[in-house]
Image (tube, rainbow, N blue to C red; front, side, top):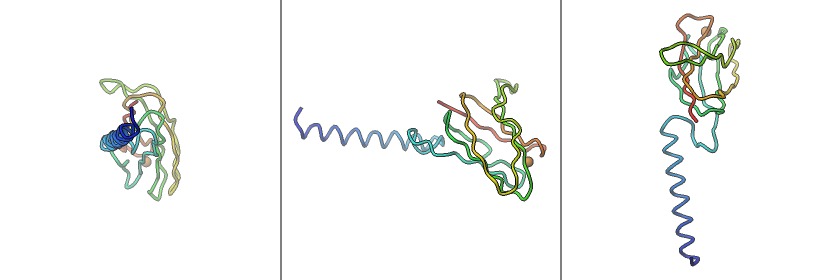
Length: 128
Ligand SMILES: [Cu+2]
């Protein structure tokens, strides 16, 4: 292979990698699979936003309480049919104006629920 041909292959590879990364970004599962910046959930007006979040296993998930009162979150694995399983985050108290970060170690669909406010829930899907 001559030098010119190698250069062309290299450029093609970099472009292909770029397209691959941006395709993932559009999936809503983080910006770049290699980088895995923190995904973000806010607690505001008695709601989690977004209502459905897709993250990678091991990707940091940052939860920020923007309400002037406390929330208490429990994150639970949800089996087919809605049955709840393993608790991934156990009753974490969030003071007003604070944030914290956790990760999910197994793929699956999880429910995040506030134990202090009825109906305050959202879904987190962890993919590999
Ligand atoms: Cu709450």
